Image (tube, rainbow, N blue to C red; front, side):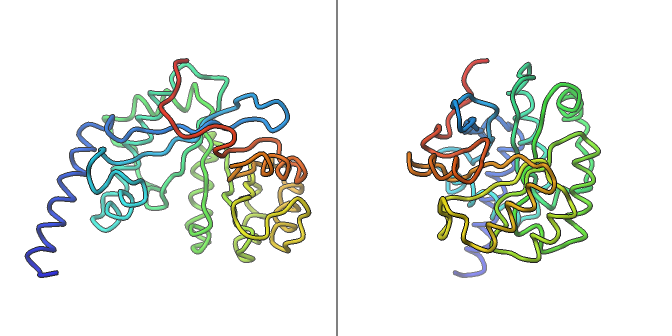
Length: 246
């Protein structure tokens, strides 16, 4: 790709993201239900943003990748949080699960979004998913966890069973929820995988609720139950969609 073409592509991408920031409603979001394994009752939703339909940023990962390349993750993350907070207004009995981006840890909420953020702290139960890649920077994950705790958010450890160093840090953080990803190889009803055994032990030691991820079949529901998961998320429990009326 020529330099001129690359500059034009970056300019086009920045325009698309700035358009999303000007009108965050275009970010979606999609909400996937989180259900109790035993009776399928909904306990919350995981919110996921995306770019405007029909553009090259419509895919969530593509949007995040381009925002990172252009240094726009912080602004995008705050805008998405505020959008989800507004969507969830009045749903005090449900958990709102978000994935805060590490680039946003320690940053200030933009003034125009402060009202939504303040309402969320007072009225909502927010759960923040910390993913394995974030644990690569121990200082960052500690700062992020401290910030989330200060806000009163629940700390959710996304599946880190294949990362021994992350598991060591996780034991110190004492998460509120620990995810077990059933879509990964080696996740069976008998937790023979060494990382899974350690993950289950960390959850037990911290009193964390176990959450199954990748519950995409009836067999996965059975596996989640056998592992002791209280709640789960996956296509067998509900696909991502607009938030139903509250």
